[in-house]
Image (cartoon, rainbow, N blue to C red):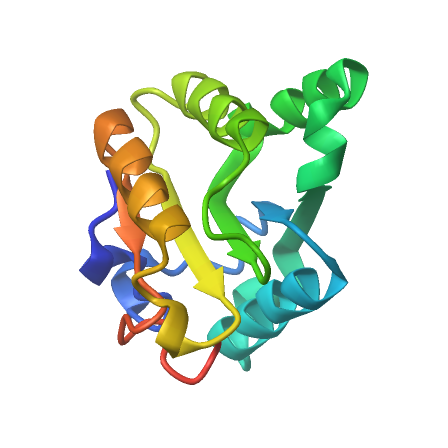
Length: 158
């Protein structure tokens, strides 16, 4: 399992060697375009000037898409290959139940695999938003690492 320290992408001990050149899949669950762009900006800032930047593979899913059973199944198919999950929301106080159920199912498919979950909100003032607490609890039940928007790993990225 990743620890917050290990997930510090700038830490050379966790960097993938350029010989590996494996895709680094990142599922991005978001509520709107602004939230999606915020997640991409965070990834860009985090991986800037790193060899892994060329191997990033964002897998975006809009919250609304997860209400459709066929789309939800397609989104679940991304879970086994995701290294990181980013949940980025701009307009929610609570995560929709369909999103929580989908994340729980995704996490079940990731058991015994290193996985981290990053929560991004519109501003650092929203850090204690109820949806973030709910997400933190869901991630803890799965035994994965949860990164806060104010994490040193993500400073300046949100």
